[in-house]
Each structure stands twice: as structure tokens, then as C-alpha cells.
Length: 329
Image (cartoon, rainbow, N blue to C red; front, side, top):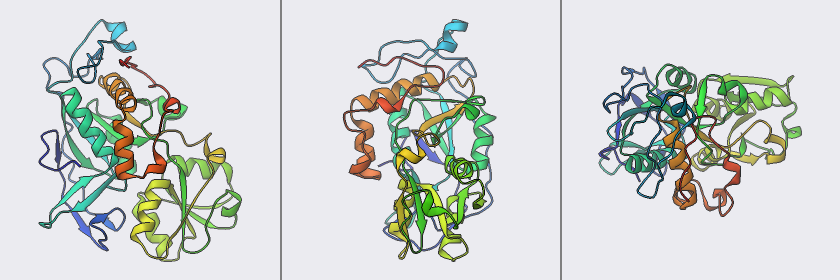
């Protein structure tokens, strides 16, 4: 489990107030204070900034490879020594959340942090974690060639602005309510529905129920509070996030929509970076290796649950949208 003193990771923000701590996990009752955003960090590898990479790969078993971007420019560089910024919500369990330690301090843990730490170990870079809500995250990643985020689905619209690795996790769409278990889209008809603005869940429900009473908010914690207060009937969320919220809040009911209903809108979760970011190919190769050697399934079992593992078939992970590096099997 990653810690703040991990040499590959640092937490640059502490402006949080916490309520309703349970099981040392604070995935949802987190009130966001003003975010003092640091300047975007630049790559520290000599001459590497903003140059498309053809990286040697992920770990000692990785074969040297090239990305499509590097092939067009003839350049190559190594991520070792680079410093990147991971931006994203830290109230998004089980992917990223604040955990209270025995000394009362907090650290960010979760599936995404574990994967990012492992990539840093294998590829030799370091990163800072910068907590931001969803909308701010998109803007930060778009404007910086050294920033990335995780737990993002790709689609043609996003691919015009961002590059993506192959998927590392297959999500379900969850529905949190205070009464009935929702299992189908039809079950949502006539209900008021909360979503985080701009998420795939938001786009999905807007497409399949365009006349529904849909309310959007900046973060999942806000959506949850609306349901808990009885102002909204249902929160349409990531399934694993919903699982953590249900476990931390008595009275919540969680249902999962069938993948057959959501598959055209909700894809696998990927790492996302700005279009042309030089490290995407190396990240993609590392994800491929970690899927093949079982590392990611181990993390999924630890942070999400055994039922969410890939198992022997990772074909649904797909390919990177650009900068593909071929990993050794």
C-alpha cells in the first residue's frame, strides 16, 4: 500500500475537512477546501520535455519499442528521472481516497495509487499527486504535457483532446438509492438522478433517458450527499465507488446496471494524458506487462474485490489510442 514517504509519491495538498470516518476510510464525506494549485511540473530528464518518446519499456523484461509519435520524429528518451503530476479526485474510493493513519495523519491510497506507484518503480519516474475535482482535472491534464489522470474511459470526443493507455480495469455502473435496488435503466424512469458532471455515467444516462430529471454536480461526494439528504432519488456512479459509499453509509442501497445496457457508453478505465504527451506509450507498455504478470489483478483484489478481477482474459483492455509500445510477454 503506498505511503506518503514513498520515494515515488508525494501529496501536495492538505486543505480537507473530514466527517463520518469509518473503517479508516474517507471516500465520500470529504469537504473540498480551496485548492492551491502548484505550477505544472516539468520533465526532469535532460532534453525530454514535450518530446514524443520511444521508451525502453517497463521493467527488466521489457523489450525496446517505439511509439507512433516517435517513429515520425525519430526521437527517443527514457522516463527515468522524470517528474510527473497525477491529478484527480481523492474522494473517489476505491481508486483514490484518504486513509487515516494511527498517528492521525492522512494519506492517499487506492487502486490507482497502487498502480501509479508500481509504474513509477518499474519506469523510474516520480510523481506528485494533486487533488482536484473532475472538471478541474480535465482542464489540468489538457494543459500540461507532464500531467495524467486515471480511471478514465475513452470515447471519440475525448480522443480528440487526450491520449489514453489500454484499459487496466473493467467498471460497472452503480446506482445508489435510499430504498429500491436499481438493476435496469427502466428502474430509473421517474426518479431524480444525480451524476458527476462530464463523466461517462452522465453521458450515458443523458443519452438513454434524455427526458429524465438529471442533476449534475462537481464531485461524487456532492451527489452522495444529495441522496443521503433525500433531495435526489438516485446517484448514478462508478460501481466500485458505489460499493465503498454503501459500505460507509448505513441505509444506502446499491444496484448494478447490466453491462449489456452500458457497454456502448462505459468502457474500460484507462490512464489519460494530454494529446501528444510523451509518456503515454511507456505507460501503456507498463500496463500491458502488469496485466500479463497478474500485478493489476492483485491490486484489484486488494482494493476492489475478487469479483472485479480480470482473470485469464484481458482482451477487453483494448489498445492505447496513440503512442502504442509493444510489451514483451
